[in-house]
Image (cartoon, rainbow, N blue to C red; front, side, top):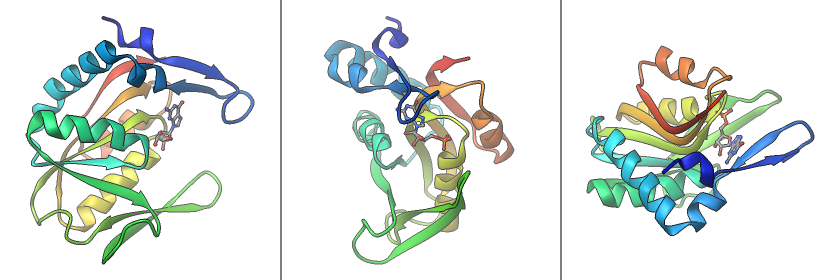
Length: 173
Ligand code: 5GP
């Protein structure tokens, strides 16, 4: 099965000139989603995670079922102000302005092996922020993965520079 057959390219979303890769069609197709999660589980298992971290919000859709398949815990990396209790925040630069990502302080124990998941890797800015936040709280980030990768952007290279191996199911040039 070709996963790409179940990913829809939506032109001019969220703004003119952008081709948005929509995973809704993959999620909605029971067999294709099952295959996708099976393949990603096989690839992510090599990073020997204790915990999977999903990046809000579509990263949750990937990380939560995968964590169950791998017998790992699942933790959320969320936008500012969404998580209750004590949180640790990481601020990062966007093309215009800054953004923040947070995790609950006690979500991960020092030295636990964590793999970060999102639906798509583009410039790598979001994934890099997730990795930096996880490192801040003492996690060992052993890998990163997504459904889709935009190979014409420097995401994979940025993760390599951070020393984090990366895998995806569908790469677009
Ligand atoms: P990056 O930070 O790597 O430039 O962008 C990746 C983030 O933006 C991910 O959290 C992802 O959900 C979102 N994103 C950017 N472009 C797309 C796209 O074409 N499709 C989807 N599904 N998400 C995208």
